[in-house]
Amino acid sequence: MILVNKPVSLSPLQAIVALKVMKPELKDTIIGYAGRLDPMAEGLLLLLTGDENKARKEYELLDKEYKFEVLLGIKTDSYDILGLIDNVNNKKLAMSDLKLEIPHLFKSLEGQQNQPYPPYSAARVKGKPLYYWAREGKIDEVAIPSKQITIQDLRLDKVEEVRLTDLKAAIIQRISDVKGEFRQHEIIERWNEVISKQGDHIFTKLICTIECSSGTYVRSIANELGTQLGTGAIAYSIKRIRIGTYKLGDAINFK
Image (cartoon, rainbow, N blue to C red; front, side, top):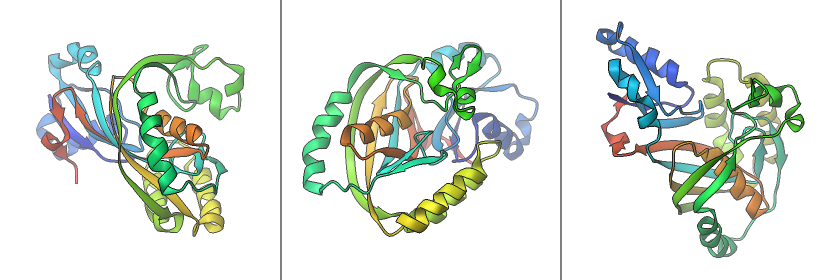
């Protein structure tokens, strides 16, 4: 097995290609992966070589741990920055209110639950992935399936206040670096419009840690937090730091 630290913008398959470029001795090795990461997510990815691929399902079922940042006041149709902004809410929660609400809110999200798949995901409905229905504007015409997940621990590490103007360069760069067709031009255009109008408004960012079962969509957790707080929210960043007993500190870095 090879542990790699997948950077933002790459798909797991693109990470395998990058690894083979970095390590030519692996050029002819059959490599698969266990537990995908979205383009906007980074961190630990398990790459399986040879016969290890036969145990892929076992590796996929391992619990995961993530560090993630939730930006309150922004909603996108993908629940992260690689989505079209469909709402901006300038409602600002006082720090004192957040400190009172969040421990109870986080505790309420722990345990076993049925989590609906995000509209922009590969779960299949009527033979097509959900993102097909979302892109065609027909997501309301299908029943969105859900999956049983377990959140063992969800905690708030830090609260920050940020301006979109200070995040602009990072947001645009991360979206631009994504390979493939993800509506990047349209998404960047919308981000630029919002930042030009709302850039100096102070938004709240929550820095969190989650330990959860396989199949948990962390960006959906961010979206749910925004819904519960009445502000809307997106996952600004997601980093997987552990899969079972495998840790990010032991992974190969591409940069």
